[in-house]
Length: 518
Length: 118
Image (cartoon, rainbow over the protein chains, first blue to last red):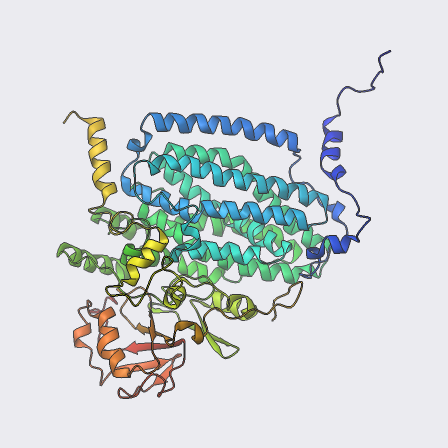
C-alpha cells in the first residue's frame, strides 16, 4: 500500500528555513567558543545570532539554478564576440590598457574575496551570515573565472594579457597596491573583513569601481566586458545588501561595538579610496571615449549616494569617514597624479601609457577647471616637447613608496598641490614613511602589522625580485631588465608608450583589413 | 595601539638595514619639480660621501630636467624629516648621522620649472 504524504513539496518558507537556518547545530564534542575562536577576539560583542536578518532569501539550489542560467547566456555572448572578431569593434586599442589593468588589478581580488568570504563563513558562529558568506564566496570565484574567460580572447591578439591575473599580482610594483589592500583585510578578523570588504569596498565604493569599468566598456565597444558586468550585477546587488546588513547587525547587537566599527569604517574608507586612484586614472585617461570624469563619479557615487547611506547610519551613531575632507580636495588631483606616474614608469608596467592629445586635454580642462590647466597641463606639454624631440621621458630611478597604501609618494599636501606630502613615523627605532595623514594614522594605529609590508621597491633593492639564479655581480647585469623578466613583462612588447607599440600597429592593420580592401 | 590577535603578534620588520647587503636606504625629493612624480629611493653604502650623492646619484636621476644644470649647491636648502639639515659634502652618509630610511628634501629657491612646478 502506498504511503500518503501530507504534502508533496515543502513551501518556500519552510524550505528556506531548512536549507539555511536548519543547517546549523550546537557542537557537543568541543565547546562552541573553541570551534569559533575568531568570533570574539576583535572585541565585537554578539548576543543573539538569530537576530540576523537574511538580506536575501536565497537557498543553495535556487542559487545554482540562477547562476547556471546567467552563465549560459554569458558564454554564448563571449563565443559570439570571439567568433565575430569583436575585438575589432572597440574604439581604439588604447582602451585595452584599461582592460589589462582590470585583469591584473581587479580580477585577482575577486579570487582573494572568494577565499576571504569562505573564511568568514567558516568563522562566524551564526548560520545566517554563514550561508550569506558562502554564496558570496562562490560569487567571487565565479567572477574571477568569468572575468578571465571574458578577457582571454584579447590575449590571442594583444600584448600584456598573458600573466596579469595570476603571476603578476604577486610581484609587480603597482599591483602590490590592490594586493596589499586585500592582504590587510584578510589577515584581520572576520568582523573587520566584513567592514573592510563587505561594507566599505562592496557597498560604499563598489559603484566607483564597477560602474566606470562597465560603462567604460560599453562606451568603447567592449561587449565581452559589458556582458560580464551584466552577469555580475545581480550578485553585486546581493553583496551590497550583505555588507549593509552586517554593519547594522553589529551596531544593533551591542553599543560597545560602535567605536570599533567606526574605526574600521574610517580606516577602510581611506584604504579603499587610495586603491581607487587606479580607477580614477582609468576613467580620465585610458578610455578613448569617456563616460564621465573621476570627479563627477566621486560626487555622484560617493558624496551623494554615500552621503545618503551615512545619513541612514547616523541613527546608530555612525559618522561619515574622517577622510572625507581630504577626499573632497583629492578628487581634483589624484587621476592626474596617477597618470603622470604611469606615464614616467611605463617601461616598468605591463600596459602602455601615452600623453593625452589636445582634444583630450581640453576635455580635462573642462572637467577640472580648478586644477588641470594650472598644475597638470604644463607637465604634459613639456613631456610632449621632449617626446617630439625623440626624448620621451622615462624615469630611471625607483620611487619612494608609502608604507601603508604602497603607492609611490606622489600625493601632494592638502593645502598645496605643488608640494609632495611627506609623513614620517618611528617604530622600534626604525623610520616609516607614509603619503598622507590617512595612511599615517593607519600605520600608527597598528604599526606591528605594517612594518611587515612587502614594498616592491625595497624588495628589488634587497635582491628578491630577480629570476632564480641571477648573478647581480655578473658583467652587464641590468637590474631593470631582470626585474621585468621576473615580472613576466616582455620588454619592448608589453611595456613602454602606446605610440609605436605592437598593439597600436596590429589594431590599425587588422581594423584596416576589416573595413577596406587594401 | 596594539594589533588585536588570537595569539602573540610579533613579527620582524621587512626592511631593516641588515637586509640590504651592507647598504642603507636614503630617500631624496626635489621640491617644486613634479616632472619626477615622487621622491627617489636610493640604496647606498653608508660610506658614500655626500658629494658623491650630489655629483653622481642625483644627476643620474634628475639631469633630464632643464633646471638641474642651474642648481647651485652652495645655496641649496636641505630638510631632513622636515627639519633644516646642513650636509657636509666631504663626510659620508654615516658620518653625518644619516640613518637607514632617512628622507631628505632638496630645495632650490628660484627654481620651480619656470613657475609650473614641472
